[in-house]
Structures are given as structure tokens and as C-alpha cells.
Length: 125
Image 1: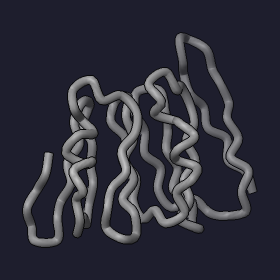
Image 2: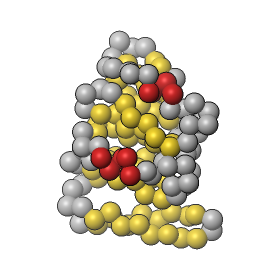
Image 3: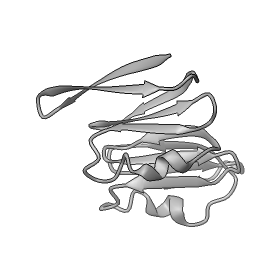
Image 4: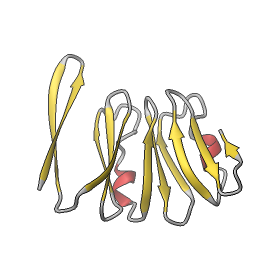
């Protein structure tokens, strides 16, 4: 199975193919990039990589359960309830997530920020 994704980048239509036999579970979009969580808990990133938001780092994750995108950064919640964040960090949007957070149950992103919900109900942002 393949999936075609259209991105509008600088007025141009670009088509990206995800060629996998797995189904997509979650799609998250930033300004000009997309992160796709596949049913085998791997991630594929597509689109503009000007801030490393589609860095090859994301293809190394094999235990992802949720994904989120900010404007120019991406976040993955891993099955061990830790978080990985990559891309633009000019506004420290990845910093709270890189502080050895444990017991994360949800991640969400805004334009220039990221938020992690912990199992005890507290929030880190």
C-alpha cells in the first residue's frame, strides 16, 4: 500500500510517497512537514527539513505510540513513556521534553511550544 501526501512548499506542490505495508495510525502536521505513525510503531517524516524537523533521527524509533508537531519541531511519545523531540528549538520548545521526563501519557504541540501530560496529572511545558 502507498500513501500520497501533498505539501505546498513555496507555492510548489510536492508529492511524497510512503511505501510501507503497514497502516497509518496517526498523522501530525507542522507548517511544512508531516509526521506519520505507522501501525508497526515506526515513524516516517516528510516535507521541509529546514529545521531538522524531518531529521533521519525519527526513522530510528521503533517503539512510538503517539506523535505531535509544532510549527518547526516534532515530538514522539515512546512506549516506555519517555519523549523524543527534534527540530527547531529556538524558543526552547524541546527543552522541557528533554529533561528526562518519565511517565508521560500524552504529548501535544503548539506553534512554538510542546506540552507533556504525566501519569500523575501534572503538565510539563
